[in-house]
Length: 472
Ligand SMILES: *Cc1c(COP(=O)(O)O)cnc(C)c1O
Image (cartoon, rainbow, N blue to C red; front, side, top):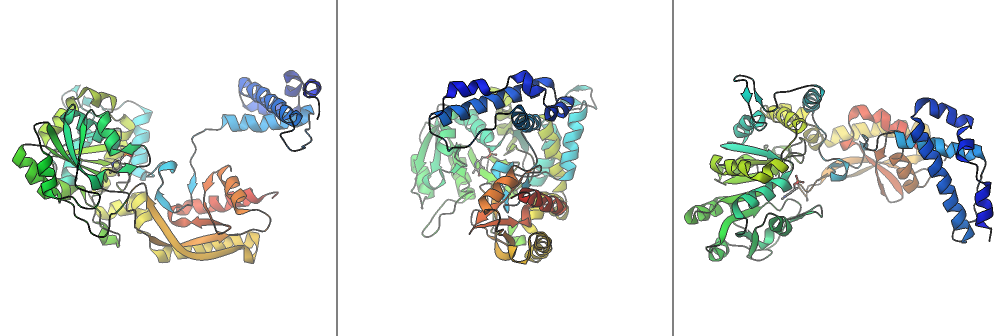
């Protein structure tokens, strides 16, 4: 066992490390305090390594304690610390709405609108015709009503906020009836029973997991009932012997008892998915025309816009949500308003929406086109890594984001197997590269699905793989 204390003394002082030539260039480009902190942290890492070696808990790596070696490490750390934490990444997983990768990429007009709102002042809450105070909600309300047929809308931070606020507004201290088949959990943090509790409402479960009838709702209605809630089971399907109540029937029941009927649609869609050979999803306008009092949905799932929770429905109910004090805490910022307005405008022409909204472009890319792109990219990789290193496989992309859970989108997968580097290590290096790329690892291969890679990012992806393999 080596003596830790003695070896700590062999570590150079901070000032000595700072004199090393490798850090000179770094100091010219980065703030001195960033470099200083990096040197201190590097020295601390060395001390920790020495401690572990002394305790016999680490392998017998010989530590190079020279100032030059420590300075090299510190230079790397300085650069790492001064590059942005939140970075654009290439999504080669084939999962379109990847919640961990930020869900929907925005259409170009939405990005421009956001930048425009960011650069200077805007009429966010200013009515240009009267010169008086306006509403940030006004910029999207007319479009939302036009697209969904609703009377009014209010946009909030996300759909979780929309459901929370709707429940809090109409059912705080009272009961809300929900089918047992619809007590969904999305992404581990949104759970209907918990959101309901947070909104101050009491959950009354009716029916069973697979079957709920109108009579189940009806017999649960009491003086304490404040609303009927329908939740779209957006990330699972119950198959086999099932029964659920159609929105229209629930609406009639609500009307009979004077209770608002609220629907959490999860992913908002305006288009008929079967047009693109995808499984059907309820459209927002169908729920509105079925007479639902309030319908809530996300902005950044199948809508392909910014993170937002959109509520559409009857004007008098929407007004009450807007007046809830919590609405102020859950409101959207100007960037969201800008991006959402621009995204909604694209839907006025469905063909344009499919063309320009990345989520729709990715959803509807034909397998033949994906095959073509994958073959070209595979060929380019073969010229770099050799014939046997790359194969093309048939496979499936996923919609992700808690939408269309059973949809399998046929795609072509590029399967990369290199002798000199293990696929898990290759995937790790790709994630840590200059332009981070995220890929799948399957059957001892790195798997790339180009469905979620923009065509003009293919070059970057090849470059990233090439760099990841350097000195492997
Ligand atoms: C996704 C989803 C939510 C949560 O929406 P966020 O916009 O992520 O807050 C709520 N309910 C359902 C049914 C969903 O699918």
